Length: 380
Image 1 (cartoon, rainbow, N blue to C red):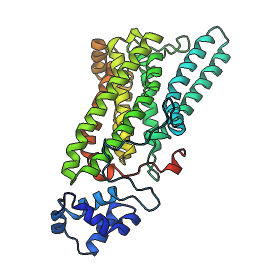
Image 2: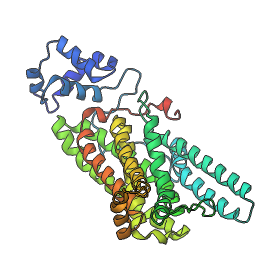
Image 3: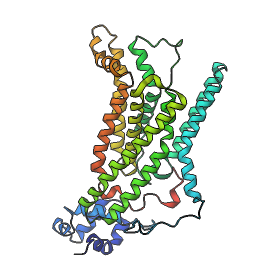
Image 4: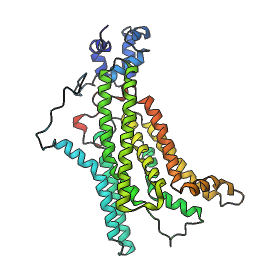
């Protein structure tokens, strides 16, 4: 048996693997050729489907550029001339920086319109919000954070993500007002957590870099592994490392944003809540990019539900006889501030996604040889 026994089947059944649309089709073809679970054990796999999953991941689909089987550090990719960047890479990098720049510009425009009429301020804020959303959409749908071609897109997941971000900006103010008997609208205007908004928008750039690094290292680990057990042993430390790197990056960006735009009112709890949300959204997108959109939507939806539950309980406590319902939220907010609610919700959901990712992202199908076709790189 060779050092990489699966490579024998890759060449023997290459036509089947290139035409297959999923691992089930390869498994059915292998069984039709007489490959059984006992045969799969000779190739260091527990069953035929496990073997088919690795074949599906390692053999490029028909029409894709084949990836090198065992890329290594000794074979660096050809780079540009000194002092130059490849045009495509430079544009993609600029797109990832766009949301943070647009968000900071929108905040500056809001501040400059402070002395204008209410209608003008509303127009400036609406325009800024629209531009930020468009920049986020462009950045997420280009480069390492875009979903695979043909992957299902969930509108529900987008709504959950939008809710958690909106809560990060206005949720602490709203919950604080509810706990003291308000809010008294319209005389009281909502107070936005500007630093959290800018920091999270800027965090998209390190998220894209971390996702790219994880994808490249994951494919290399797949090419160098001789079975799913070895692949899992390679991928788990990668996922933990990339999560820690992004955690440090988003925490640093949020701290810089708080210094630049203020936001000390929420204390350390507000920074922890925004950091936990950034990590949650990163892990959710990473799972979606690698073929697990349902798990991603579940994680973000859980955090959104917990965040919505807190003000709902405070409001329900105003009904005669239901006052005890608001006691847990009031106690948590009294101990660590209103930001403790999203901090706890996002931290719990992020840990759940991390645990799920340590199992789901160790499969061969999570690391296809060519996740982004060159012709499709600019398409949503």
